[in-house]
Structures are given as structure tokens and as C-alpha cells.
Image 1 (cartoon, rainbow over the protein chains, first blue to last red):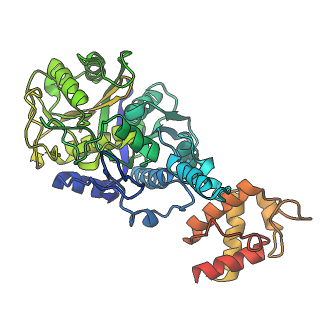
Image 2 (image 1 turned 180 degrees about the vertical axis):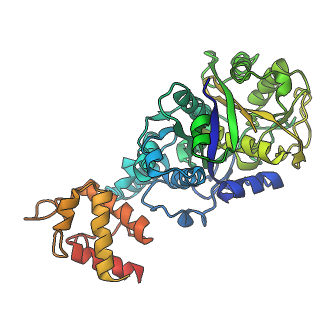
Image 3 (image 1 turned 45 degrees about the vertical axis):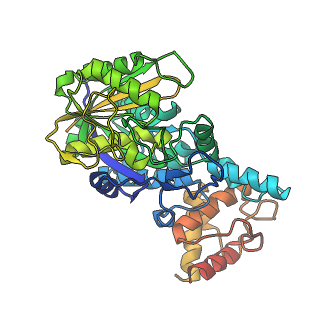
Length: 395
Length: 89
């Protein structure tokens, strides 16, 4: 079977621009969840989030006429393509898989609010052109001249991981040897207010796997990977950052928001990813958990992890405690985190974890990063509506 | 940058980003008008102007105020290149 490697990586995160900056923040265990400034949160249960710093946006070399999400997506995608060192001919054949949910909704909301406030049509019509989730793929393909197959993957919080799984399938099926895959989401009112109304936001920075956890913290980011047929990568002498060994995608078909109470779909996703990568649970040294910090997710994910790996048999951490839940980007942000963890032999911590939940029978690496020699790791992404994706990466 | 250099860059952007025929670009002069409806103009429509604004911001590293009416500035390549020159200085 065709082996799929990663030859490029780009991230714009609440730590700033670049995969290096992202890794430095994770390795330090810096919690980037702070008072939210992008939107007004007066009267909300939670008033914090992990934003891409305001001073970073003008440095991205992207017009501010583009949506906030497009701006960070373009910068992350550029970094990934530059690292992969693709020629224009390679790009003309590169596929594009973008995990997206919010699109340019933030600007759409602003446009609408302005009209509602002033009673006049706002002149910022550009805002409406990039409102749909598919608009990122259009911007990226046009600007970066990517000419291969293109797909927007809308699978809630699993979108970014699913785009990687599906992009790899495209390579394996012979569609193209190169795919830029990842996800992006910027903070929007509809997302923040929705989760606030569902009472799923912790007023304090989220504490995954903690006994006192009260919900998630929202974040924003973009992360892209260049996936490549290993033979193609070798032939052009490009550097390999890691290998996508296998992926599993399942659906609970159980409830609109709640996961299956026994984690049935999660277990199948992890088992499928391991089988696809021809790995046993014992081969996995680290799991980058979905770990949202909601009471339900963390309890059920721990159950599922125990079923797959055995209690306490694998290190688990949630990088959402550091950069928030970046929604459609989360799966690709955490894929990037998992690859960097393997590269550096250092497991990023679960921040804000003070009182481990007795229902979570795992070492969740509280507080500070831990050096561990790793060969293989797994990343989980579980979206609303029971959309489960697990990715297995190797060094 | 000189106005001449800006003018050449604008022509290049019109070919690259607005997908104009390069042969037609070769015929463009400073006096060539842009908006559609004008005799002998390039015939740019509102979407073209949005794309061109984004392209100009990214190429020249300038910021163009979205709320300001810039009909006069976007009238011809000459007026547009003078507008960019005032921004990059």
C-alpha cells in the first residue's frame, strides 16, 4: 500500500506565527487562554478564549480585506508549502482538503451588525463573499496556485482531522501524490454564543480530565500539513517530518451533541486507525486526546481509551488546555502537535489539571511537558453529532 | 518605488489575479481606464475591483480604507498608480 508521509507543516496559533512558535508554547506549557477581545462577551458565562494575538495579524502579509480565518489559513498554508519546497509544477498537481466550519462568519456578523445599527447597507461587501466555509479553499487554491482535487470537509470539531484522513486517502487512491490538508477556524459570535448557551464553556481556562472541569475554552487557529506519497517525496529528495500510518473515521449515530455513553464510535475510530497503520495498542506511546474539558467528553473518552489501550497503559494529554478548542482547526492543530511531540520526544502537558478525575485512569501529564522516547502516537478528534476521527502518526 | 514601477506591477496584477489576456495587458497605457461602461476601458466590474484591492494590499503592503469611496482613484491606471505611490511613500 502507498505510504503517506508529511513533508510540510504550518501553524498559526494563539502563540503566534509558525510551527516553531507553536511548539515552543506547547513545550513550555503556556496556557494561551485569556480575556476575549475579538467579540463582546458582556453577560456571558465565559468571557475567555485563546485568540491569535492582534499584533500578529498585520504581519502575515495577507490583505485585511480577507476574513480573519482566511488570513491565518493563508499564512499557515504558505508555511507548510514553503517547508515542503514544492515547485510550481508540483503545486499545479497538489490537492487541497480544508476542514472548516465558521468560514468568514465573523466578518459576516460584523457586516450584519453594522447594517442593523445604522440602518444602511455596509459598504464592506467583501465580507459576504467569504462567509461560507468553502471560501477558504477558494482563497487558498487561487492564491497558492494549487491545481489538484479540492474538498472542504465540514465535520464539526473533527473537520481538521478528517481533512487529513481524506487527503491521505486521495493519495492512496492515486488521485495525486501531494495534498495540502488541514483546518482553520476563527472565533465567531455564533460559535462562542452557541457553546455559551449550551453551558459548555468553562468560565475559567479549561481543565481537561480534572475532577472540577466545567467545560471547554474556545480557541482559533489554522494548521496545514503537506501530505505526500512517500515514493514521490523520496524521489524529489524532500525532508520527511513524519508518517501518517493510519486513520479511522466512524459515526456514533446516537445524539445531536452527546457522545455515545460507552464511547462506541470512539473505540471503533481508534481501533480502525491502529489496524490501518498495522499497529497494536502497545505500540502507541502517547495519545493527544480530544480532551475538551466538558464533563461528558472527557469521561467517555477516558472510557474509550481504557477499552482500547487498557487503564493507565498510555500517556494522554490535551493540548486544548493550552491553545483552546480551535474547532474546525483542532484536528489539524493536534495532528501538528502530535508530529512535533514525536519529533522532539517531549509530551506537551495538560494545563490547569490540578485534581485528576478518578474516572480517568490515565497519566494526563499535568502541568509541565515530559521527555519520553516515542515512535508512534495517536491523535483523537471527536465532533458534535458523534463524528469520530483518530489518526496514527509515526516518526 | 517609482510610479512607472507601480504601473508595471499593476499591469502584472491585472494579468495574474484578474486573469486578463497578457496581449491585452501589453496594450495598456497609463491612460487606460478601468471601470466597465467607459469607452475603451478594461471593463472591470465590482468583483474585479475587490480582487484588485486585495492583490494591491498584498503586493504593495498597503492598507486601503474599505469605507472610503475611491471611484476617482480606481478610474485609470494613472490615477491608481498615483494612489498607490501616495500610500507606499
